[in-house]
Image (cartoon, rainbow, N blue to C red; front, side, top):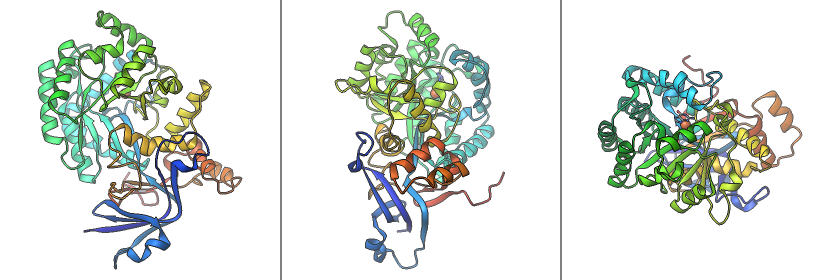
Length: 441
Ligand code: GUN
Ligand code: FE
């Protein structure tokens, strides 16, 4: 096998922290060693204990000042929106029409999609994100381009072609039949090819007819294990439109439920304005509510109610995501910082431990991939990020007032950190990004 090794301070979560100070939720090894064989973690422990197991001739990547974590996981991001990010002055439905539906048309061109895929993966890796659940455009060639680039780099993505057969420009619509056939062909081509996974991706209830939602449900039934991703209850005008379009449905969640789209492999972006009944259905079905704080603030959609969704008698599984280009940053650190502020506005809390657990182990669990990624345990892919809590003058100055406390350091990283705090990113134990290396652009 091919061996690689990393040395430095290691941090990995065991379970969701119950709150600040939950020392049992994670393992931190001050001078640790990761031994990696063929891209997977083979052994993890202290450098002193493991150094004799380093095979002869294997150079150890030593990060004496770095904090090594499992790579970040982004559970909701739009691949064709890299040139939509930071579009001025609109709420959801206008934002889609005015900016997004214009830009996504360019992804009919395979060359544009291939160049976009290179930028997209560069940017994820620069931000320490090693796995993402990504929406393509309606064009299957956009998803082919993205999976091909991920495969070339050794990254594992979850992605799907957007299905939308109404209420969008003609150049961006498929049909119930073509959406089904194109998605099926992509599943056969890419699902479980190496690390790649497919997600059936009806954009949202407004842009799919009943026939198309029916087809999406059929794809899930015919391909067990395939993921599902869509948007749910993001914006009040959106919700009113869904009510008008589906007058016999009990509520927005029920629209998806009727077509068999709820379940443990289903990711629902936003989930901001849900009723009690909807949260109960999401909980019962094991569906995931995806918190997209920078997007929810930027598009003016509302404040995610983590406490309501977490209620012990009907807990809804949750994950954290950027939602670029409605979201304003590729950085999961920045995203966690905005999540903290959103919850502050609701009188709720997100501890640094909870945030870092969510970005790594928690998001992996939400994707049903906890035995593949998200922790530093033997058998997991060695997708890693190396962080520097002294990356900027403001961070350094703040860190000088902190006496080695891990939780305070993590909080500095999530409130002040972004791509500048990422020194290295590894995919399968191989360096995929190095902050110090010159870039092409
Ligand atoms: N709802 C339907 N499509 C989209 C999208 O592209 N971004 C966001 N934020 N919400 C959506
Ligand atoms: Fe989105």
